Image 1 (cartoon, rainbow, N blue to C red):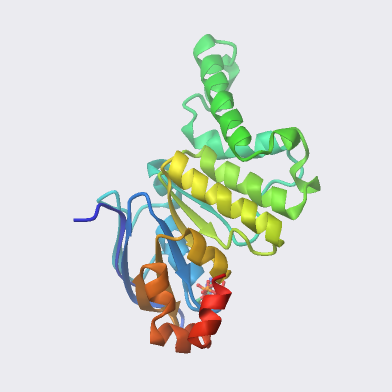
Image 2 (spheres, rainbow, N blue to C red):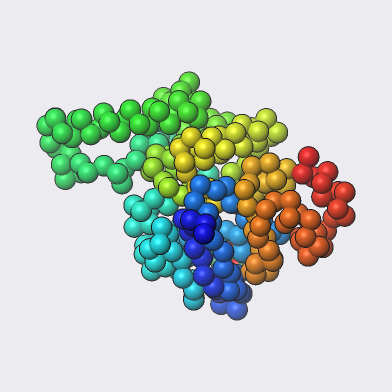
Length: 265
Ligand SMILES: Nc1ncnc2c1ncn2[C@@H]1O[C@H](COP(=O)(O)OP(=O)(O)OP(=O)(O)O)[C@@H](O)[C@H]1O
């Protein structure tokens, strides 16, 4: 039996008359890179928002590590180990890279503003140092040491996306939700980001659920792929099986088989 870190059962979500998701069920194996693909408006971001707790589904159930989290708030889910990045950049542009990443760390710190005035007491100081060390490790891992003191807003788009990933990793997630991590990137930046995603999956053991439009990337780095179409699940399975599925080719890709394979590089 597969060990699933995430189990999504019959999730439905509507905005007024718009059915964003209809009875979507799937499981994400622990340790997998799981990609969600589908045309614009298919419900991909809505699904991610249901998992992170930003949206409350109208019906269905979401289990994380065998705990029902359907009714938990986003912060509680973050505490349990669900991290995320957003489709649009959500960094504090005026703050340094280091401070932006420390924000991601905040919820792990026991010594908060209440104990802040006691900063000089050694436990708080030790804790701060330990956090800094782990954050520096992430900075090193993502090769952003050279910009750690830079103001985030001044960095290139590709670098800012990497800082955002660092901030999500700082939360020490067991599961990370990535909403189009490569959108707007050039080829080189995409290749770098794909490498970091694979490494964080393999080296840090973080399970990845990712929305991505670039089929080459999806085919390259995913262990499993799910296709959404008009809020419904079309299929999920191994990348090649999904790409070769007749419904997927017709409904989503609109490509002939040889073109599909070409797209996948
Ligand atoms: N907050 C919201 N209020 C109203 N409608 C919404 C909201 N969020 C999503 N929708 C609608 O739900 C449907 C699914 O949208 P969603 O953003 O989840 O799709 P998507 O697959 O992520 O699309 P894209 O690839 O364009 O990001 C769309 O019809 C969208 O207009």
